Length: 462
Ligand SMILES: Nc1nc2c(ncn2[C@@H]2O[C@H](COP(=O)(O)OP(=O)(O)OP(=O)(O)O)[C@@H](O)[C@H]2O)c(=O)[nH]1
Ligand SMILES: [Mg+2]
Image (cartoon, rainbow, N blue to C red):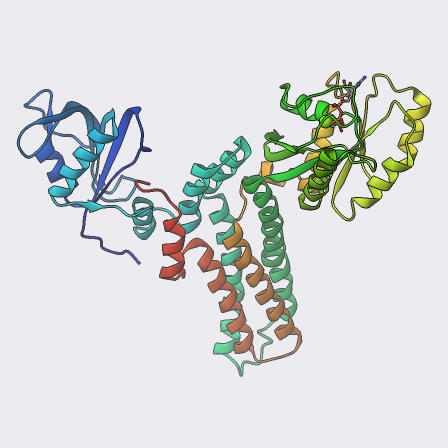
């Protein structure tokens, strides 16, 4: 469906505030006439070629010069929206930009809604919905891995995966339709075995992989919450500082140094992680420290992963073990700290105490073992198949995930229908519904309100 848009939209595409340059974008049939009215190229006799940058001035309706600009006209269809597009690069003064925009609106454009340029690109069929969504993803990415995934999706990686699955389902539907069209044929037209096999290998398995990637994508987008916990003086603040490579938290030989929680953002191999240093937890604390301990316990309850720290230079105590047990069900990694001063016997004793959990030997003071610690944390949160994203560069979002799961359920119904010997047309109905679900992901069958919701997340001018 190609929607014919007849109006022309315009918006400031750069963020508000002072900057070196600011960009105004115009898209639609009035883009070129507006450029001709407002812009005077430095060389008066120049005719404006498409996709060429011109230096000149922008004037208001009274002929007053508003700014010196670079302007470009991009003729449809080789543009972001597939419409005629004009861009003005002025100085990055918000006042100048809004004045130029007002002139553009005066000459027959209207203000673009958030994401409307990208929506036009989608409606014109230049990009599918997953590529459009990748644009927001890219704008919002917090880490280099997030950027990498967004770029992969923008280049159509997810679209390709979905398209391959869709084609397999279309193949299945074709087999079923032959059986529907020739019900009385002597030949056994419906080979359920073959359909089931195809469904399993070409549809269900790839769907399950995409679902696993979605889980990883969520972590890469939203990051995780890591809380460092342990008895007083085991080196929690030292570890925070070591991971940050900055003396952020106070470190002293006195137990009970940290009272309040301290939170910072770090990147664990490309995953954004909020890392929280807490008060050492102990029984006989003074009242201020006790408040800190309550906070520490609260943070542990909210954690995605607890980094449980023990002092490997002294024998493990009952308090260490009690605290460890009191962590409850939360995912954890144990770090045996101060290995620089720990003797072999006490280290061995500590290692044998933590047999049911992954542990790492570190020295927060000497920054020793930290790479290994980050590796272990990474594998703990991303699962065994942590390399998936590097190979395939795509991570379905929450919207995609819900649809992928629905598609997988539809596959289970196809399986049951084939096994249960129901009529072929009923099986075909289920296959069609699986196809429709996947169409929603790429935007073939997506309803207007879902589209509106997606594009509303964009900023204006994108
Ligand atoms: N030798 C050695 N000393 C360390 C190491 N890590 C921390 N320390 C020392 O242990 C003491 C306590 O360190 P902190 O980082 O303040 O410990 P903490 O767990 O934050 O302590 P509280 O905030 O009181 O709970 C300080 O004197 C640190 O210098 C290490 O890896 N090796
Ligand atoms: Mg501390």
